[in-house]
Length: 242
Image (cartoon, rainbow, N blue to C red; front, side, top):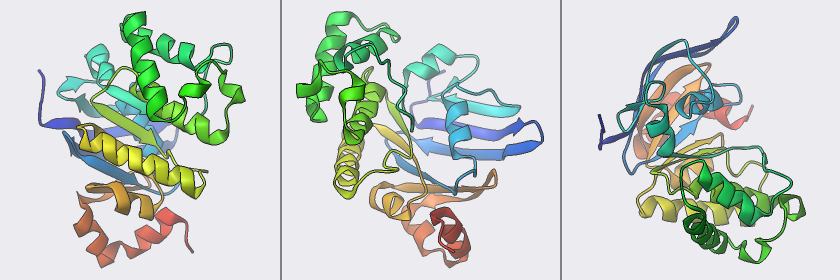
């Protein structure tokens, strides 16, 4: 059944890799239209959580729903609602970036002519239209980062999930991505952002969740989280400051 209020609802999620417990009874919700910052140091469980939400990884127990659709039983409905922006540049090296976006849209049943129009709109939005006939290897690192966003948005998902999208970016590109994410959220997209940059979460998020060693440490409104002095040690670990 469709849930119009909760974009993502996770209950008692557990995930293990052999002897490693990556997620330990993780429970939280992300409201529709929220900009949710998911913070944690490397290895905390951020990417594992994303992989479970998007169906890229199975899990041992618990429940994960996307607008009410179970990610296992209702996989097609759940996946249609999500756009995933990964850290890796895993593009097809034989297609132009325009062709690649049209091809990606086909996975979601979008006709080629409609996909082509959407691809051009996205490439224009992210200042890549003049590169549409280039293959991704001809793009700079910053252009590839923007192309990841285009690909995640090609089927017009309701939820945009980003796994550390500004990692390795210079300041100019970082600010450009921040501006676009804020605008997408204002346009109605629910955004789920993983990061270990406190500045990024503070700048963009409305709600912040902190995960560490597979446990949810704290969850709440950004202002409340940032005022909580008891989280100082966790913030230091998240940002890698000794």
